[in-house]
Picture 1: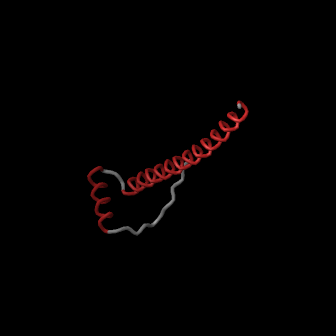
Picture 2: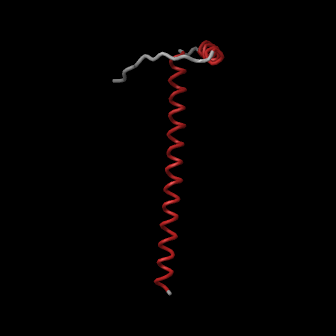
Length: 77
């Protein structure tokens, strides 16, 4: 069962006006718009962290491959 929590936000007037307009035009509750915005932000941050992790793994794998290649070269001499 999903539970909901209430939060209070302070935002700039221009953002509030845009949210108010979107809410009315699309007949969507402001809280639903906020939830979707938070979900998108969380997804973006998660993807950025994953990309950073993959980059670090690539660097580690590349260094290990270079070390292994050099060791193999020494063995084959």
